[in-house]
Length: 242
Ligand code: 1GP
Image (cartoon, rainbow, N blue to C red; front, side):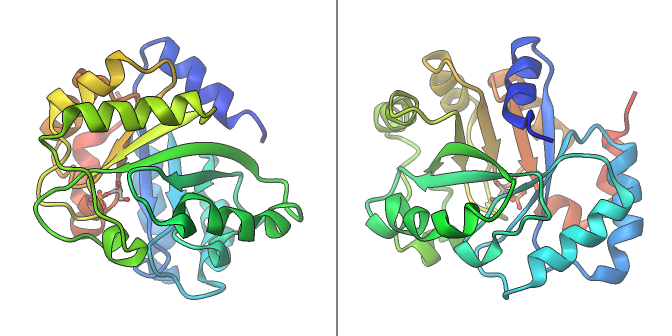
C-alpha cells in the first residue's frame, strides 16, 4: 500500500474529513486488540496511527501484527523514537519537531532512522510536527526537552507551520499533546489552515464529538484521537459510520 499520502491529499481536497485512532503500544494489551478493533472498524476512522513517546523495543511490531489480523485500515507509524520503526506498518509519519529547537528531534533522530527505513517498504511521509502549549507539560515536551509554542503566539505558530511546508514537508501536525487538558483552539486551526497548501493534522485532548467537529469545521483535514478511546471505548458509538 503506497498511496497513503496521495489518498490523504485527495480525500482532503474533496472536503472529506479523516480520523486516525492513535494506539500506544505501551497501553494496549494484545488480548484486547480484536474487540477494540471491531469498534474501530464500525466507526468513521480512516487510519490507525501507532506510536508513543516511550515504547519498549518490539512492542510496536507485535501490536501491528495483531492489528493487521482484524483491520484493512492503513496503519501508520507515529513514532516517538527510532526503535518503533517496523516494516509491519504501511507507512510512517517522518516527523521533525519544528516547534522545538532540539537538534536531536529536528534532524538527529531522522538521520539515525535512515538505515532502518532502508530495510522497509514503509511509505515515508515528511511531517512538520508543531507542539502547542495546553496548560500542562506533556510527554512530547518532556521527552524531546523542547518548549511548545504559546497558544497566544499565533504568528509564530503560523510561520512555523508555513516554514514546514516551504521546507517540503507533506503534512503539518498541530499537536496539543496526548491527554491535553485543552485541545487546540479553533481559531488557531483556522488561521494555520488558511495559509497552508498541504493537509493539516490536529491532535491532542479531543475527547468529544463536539470537539472533533469543531476541529474539522476550523479546517483540520485529519484529526487524531487516542486517550478518549483508551479511557472510554463507548466513545466509538458516537462515531459510528453513517
Ligand atoms: C497525541 O495527538 C495525539 O499525540 C492524540 O492525543 O491522546 O489526547 O487524543 P490524545
